[in-house]
Amino acid sequence: MPSKVIRDPLYNYISIDQERDRWLVELLDCPEVQRLRRIHQLGVSDVTYPGASHTRFAHTLGVLHLMQQMYQRVEQIWKDASVSMCRPRLMAAAVLHDVGHGPFSHLFEPCLDIDHEEWSVKIILDPTSEVNKVLRTVDPQLSDGVAKLIEKDNYEMPQWQKFLLSSQLDVDRMDYLRRDSLFTGSGYGHFDWHRLINTLELHKGQDGNLDIVWPEKAKFAIEEYIFARFYMYQNVYLHKTTRGFEKMVEAMWNRAKQLRKDDTDVLLVPTISAYWDEEKPTVKQYLAIEEFTVLQQIQQWQEHDDRPLSELARRFLHRDRFAMIEAPPLSDGLADGREEWEDALKEKVNKAGYPPESFCLRDQLKGKYNQPYFPEKESDEQSAKNAIRIRESGREQPVEISQLLPRLDPITAKPRDRYRYYVPDEARAAAEKLSREWKTK
Image (cartoon, rainbow, N blue to C red; front, side, top):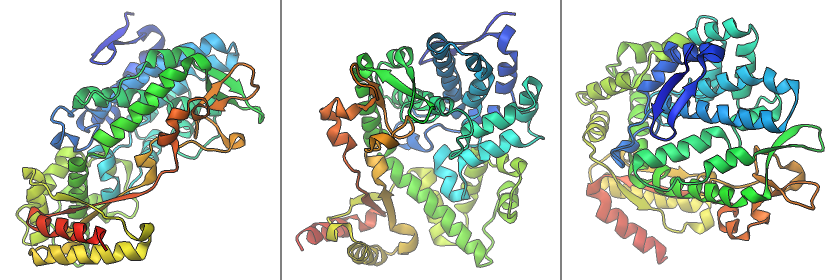
């Protein structure tokens, strides 16, 4: 049986051996996986980068492709029967790691109060799901093993297997950094991914577990990768325009939730109403909420009698963005200083004729996003989960890479939170003046 060949803009061809892996093709064809074709990989980033219309499905294919190559590398360097036994689990986890994503990817997690990894696990373990049925044809226990690999804090599977999929340098990040860079046109996601795959090593730690490390000759490829992460976060993932629309969507949904709590009809479309009515929504109810469902809901909200809800919906659909105001230095970041600043800013928004609870939006950029690689400093607590480590000649234990490359210190320094605020353009001049005056206090 010939290989299944898929054309991809990153890797040219992605190939699946149908004689050995016919089940992988069937897994990709499952409706729960095909649904990922209708989920934007970068949420609403196309409001900033018009080319950012690629999907979670394309990313899934890329992760599978890289996992195939990573597995081949492990086969070469670790001659053990357990390696061949884990192959189906690794390939299935690569395909299903994002199957629980909601509309616009991460954007709707706070709106629907979900964690996509938890839903991925629920979908995989649900005996009525098509993905579960395909996994059972391979091995009755396969769905359980795949779920354990994907579940956030579950380490029942060998940790090196989990770290191939989710760690500081994994197949997921390697694909999305390069793919997002390509489709946004930003050009920041370049690094020698081929070298990273073909120099990967397994190291048996003091606890007896196998961990992922790299030889010293890979250190500059890793440095490239770390800088790519940093630049992509600063210029794409945390772009002020994108974040502004994300905060607008959150404010819109929070407004709708509050109105509904107050017994106001918020014109819910049936699938969203069914989801919100259930204390524990089913997998079927969750999967029914897609991007076109959400857009239909936002369209309906444009006609709602509640002005904040209709105005937020209109602004989102028409790309009528808010102005970003960078917070001034606030009492060394103490909460009391921030509250005083926010109260003053809300007053400016209110004077411009907008209710501040929906039109003065705070964006807290947590430190880990400002410094996307922040390693564990204590060597005895390091693993691929929290550090990228190099096996240096002459040393028994691997070393965290910034110890070998001091120029990475600015990126690995302790991260700090940043605060940005979004207000209607009519309040912009007053808000900017307030910020300037606050800095001189």
